Image (cartoon, rainbow, N blue to C red; front, side, top):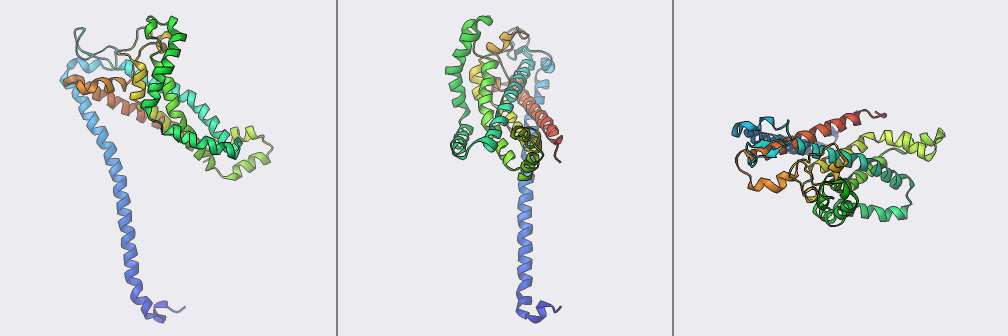
Length: 321
């Protein structure tokens, strides 16, 4: 076969610069993408380093802070004598409310996603999907305010007799859990819908061809096949739940962990989590107290990282590889 450059000298004249230019552009775009990825990694490590460095200063600023994970007494100003930096109650509050919110919202979100992708008629989906997107973008402070003026009084009327101070009943983990459910439910639903719609139609056809009912097809074929996408939805919902501060702070209204921790009343009285004291007290904090709030933020990053690792492990156990 004859070389095209020998047939057309003009092609040989213009092909080389064009090839060099294309290669240069490709290398430039690849370098830009690499820099963007590297910048994200640097920012993430920078956040961990900055917060961790300030958090570790707590131990040198006050020797009493070494027992911060072994007690629930939070008194960095020393109002009761010796300063105490017990963060165990804050950690427990964040873990309990986050896990409860995720456990309750996940089956509801998966059921709603299956309904909208497999059962819902087109005209109803055209109504529900915009409403879901509006709900997803609703400011957290609005949800927290609505819970404060509407949800807290309802809980107070129902659970008031169970608490030591009925006038303060309604605040606490129960209200915070409901707030987190309302906040993460639209996120999990939206991502779950996208994960289910990304599945190939062959999964539907193969399951139905084997004699499965529609419910068996959704339960035994679609959900296992979309495990990775569904787990990602839960991860994002969990990340928003554990890091939420303002809306949860409005309905917690506590300063320390209550004493009756092993009774149902713990959910219906003023309580704490990891983000609440940072929002309320960090601007005025100085010295070791300020470093203690950095430690709370650092622990929050670690807990979030552990949750993500656990969720990714669960996603890796998918039936469909």
